Amino acid sequence: MIIEPRIKGFLCTTAHPTGCAQDVREQIAHVKENGRIKDGPSRVLVIGASGGYGLASRISAAFGCGASTIGVFFERPAVKKRTASPGWYKSAAFTEEAALAGLYARNINGDAYSESLKQRAIELINKELGCIDMVVYSLAAPQRELADGTVCRSVLKPIDEPFSGVTIDINSAEIRPVSLEPATHEEIRDTVKVMGGEDWELWIKALMEAGVLAEGCITTNYTYLGSEVTWPIYYHGTIGKAKEDLDRAALALNEKMASVEGTARVAVMKGLLTGASSAIPGMSLYLSLLFKAMKAAGNHEGCIEQTTSLFASQLFGERRLEQDDAGRIRMDEWELSDEIQSYVRENWAKVSQSNLNELTDFAGYQKAFLQLHGFGFSQVDYAAEVEQAVEMPLVD
Ligand code: NAD
Image (tube, rainbow, N blue to C red; front, side, top):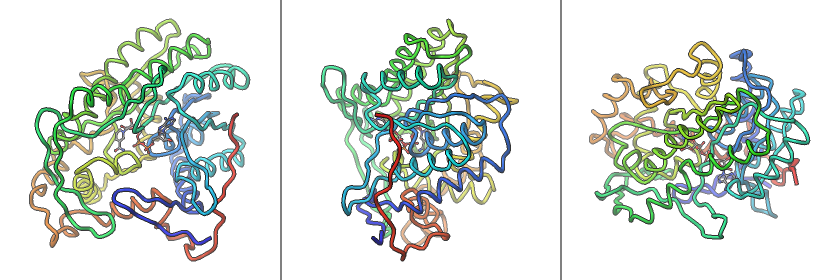
């Protein structure tokens, strides 16, 4: 069939298999251009491996370090005329490219929060890899089902004060006001349950109890701080509370993993357009301004540039495990530099419908949104018929 983008609000309900494969190949090419990462891990488990930072981490590990990877994700295959999710197509393409390169890659599709999926991953590690020396936790999920069947939902809301800002419609580029009431205590608690550090701890606990963490194992989790313009909805909002909980979990994990001389780190990554961040109210304006400023400064990066330099420098290279005062690895230094943030601050309230394309890189934001779903790649012939059902080897 011929697949076109079908966009509703901040969602695109279709994905293009050829474009998603192109995205994966471009990420692999970037990693290869950067050269082999010395002293990297050789067996890596990536939880949340099919999109954004998790997929990029998997590509950096596999194609930069030559690592065997197990990817855990929650993706939807194509059903009749309905396309698969972008993460399905991208994981299928990654698996194919890994096989061509002679790299071990296995996929587990299901709910990473569940105990049964953790046990499936452990069985696979035991059977095929023996143990692992890196665990990347990169889940971004709207909800979590707890062991007793209770479902907690994560919300993107401010705390204490109402939030008012603007959002930019992806299709029409129309700037619209958006306002949100503060979250309730239950909503804050539930967001921390979904996006906080508890499940990261449960994964490490299960892996340790099964004896499949190698000596010197490292585990990372990703956070975002942003600047004062995004704080009301991000760092001081419900998601920020969950991110604070990651810092607590990292401390606890460092103690727990001492018996295997392991290390847990939270890495602060740059703000980028991914499946998860496209849903954050007000983020479209911030990222459009940020892209404009960072592209002009020549230091704009995507997920793959970020994870590749995280691996090559801060995790396994010359800045090995360098921490800020809060014990985190910083990959957002350019984003938060005075030069970039003063541009964002100065123009934050000035953006209007008439100067949107002049003050911001909304066009770049739109392109990134399309490419997230496999559209907008010049190498792909979107008028050609394409098979929407793409097979992917999965672990039962
Ligand atoms: P994403 O939406 O691109 O990817 C999320 C991943 O989680 C996908 O692989 C998806 O399949 C998986 N997933 C979701 N629910 C699952 C479930 N129940 N079981 C198994 N897998 C599940 O998200 P992203 O933006 O790459 O976010 C990853 C992490 O990076 C998050 O912690 C996010 O807060 C953080 N981060 C993102 C940004 C950004 O700007 N996007 C910046 C800094 C940090």
